[in-house]
Image 1 (cartoon, rainbow, N blue to C red):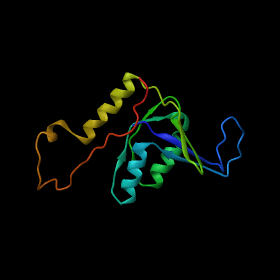
Image 2: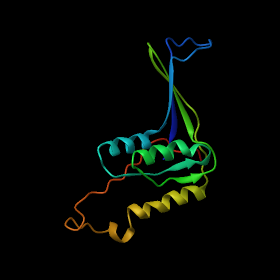
Image 3: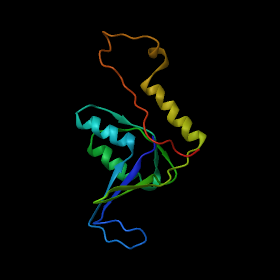
Length: 147
């Protein structure tokens, strides 16, 4: 629902208050929902990712979803998606998670209206095991945006 740019930085040793030179760094599309969709797609399972996608850095997510053959059904909003910084050294990983997008009630209504695509009201009242042998699963995961 609230994707994040994952910035991972590897250091020899994190020393608070000092300037560091990174050994390596990587940037990738992330957040719990994107990560779950990516893992599902890795098993060859067709799936759709949805939530709120800020226009300021949507390209990293759009490229990732396209490359993984994940349907992109995000609601576009103004702003920039949050960044999660992971600093890795010999002692372990230090996480710094930045704040995410603020969404309006209008944006929330757009996302909620998409649920009709997954669960049409008339069809949700009855289950037809012969006509629909595949089970539709909907996973709500991740941090909620501000507001």
